[in-house]
Image (cartoon, rainbow, N blue to C red):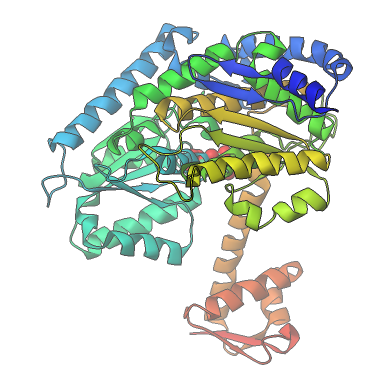
Length: 528
Ligand SMILES: O=P(O)(O)OC[C@H]1O[C@](O)(CO)[C@@H](O)[C@@H]1O
């Protein structure tokens, strides 16, 4: 395509949202008009399904749930007065609590004010708050946030070491929709133990954010925690940033949560437009569909050219991959759908893997995220006429051109500034794009059956460990792995047993292994 035709294509396809100052450029995706035309019926269906979902249809049939994250930023759209009330009351409750923490009416037993937040949660109960903290927290937030988002003992130690004595003035959020996620429970129990060791009262510093009547909800209520915020059944973990999951921590860090909600609402309105070219979420869905042939054949590389948006790709990884990565379509056919998402930030990644993107296997499409405002305030010139921000902007354009020259597709999302409104809008934009794309490829975006298999297998390993320990404690002499498996009645699990005893041995858990550790058949195991 010559330069003039390309410039025309750019103008023809450029989407601009005036209120948000947001642009979406899909001109460097290689689709032609006929391909777009062919997809039209699918989009008509997708828009209809989306409207039904927003009106309260059961969009998640196997879990019998509605999907209502859109109502969070426009409660008037909620399908029942009860849900409207639930949304506004929760928001009021959050704001009242945040205000009390700010002025010190709610404070820790041993300090006048809370200084820090420790947020314990995983997946959708961590990724949104992490992304938003990185994107929007001021340099010196009123409360500094820290995360435990794993069952990694060393990771927990590191977070607690970072807090040090400030644990006494730390507000602990335990966030779990189900209230039963093991990683979150483990983090909570470890933190509770540290509170006890230091003579602190956990309940007086803890808040639960969870489904009503969940295990965690009941625990918090029975132990008299500071408060609880409800997670609605109709909000999925990966679309929960603008619910009680993300808002309390954001507000406590001094982030304008009403502006985040307003930005999301504006974007929701823009993405309800049933006209492909005038709907940025539909344009994204079109680009994804075209790039991956409707089968996810190409990975989505997300490259924000702004450090504060570093965690956006990680946040999107769950939103996109947990929503779209499905074995079966809605008619029960095996389709193995999904789109892989990765990325960090530009221009940093240009010095890492962009080499492969330009010249190597063409199995991706790029999403550039551009922020027009370089920094708050004046930029010094690095050399006559050029600032660091000019360089960053140049690197983005340069990489986009270099990829295009080698037939690598890209799209570019441009926002004026990273602020609560634009971040809310970006969250809403991708939520809607995922929903529309799911309709295009006929899958349920709102469940995650595949995660259960791994969870069940992990629980089975913990049960096996208990069994193995019991056998070893009552054994009169060291046992070979084969004998141990036989005695436990689990011959077929000898490899898992080997891994269990090796792990216990490495952690001073009373396990003795003799023999050649690299040759499992020679190992004898005993336990004190
Ligand atoms: O908030 P919960 O119930 O602890 O779940 C955490 C995460 O685990 C998942 O259920 C998948 O394992 C995610 O969908 C969810 O965001």
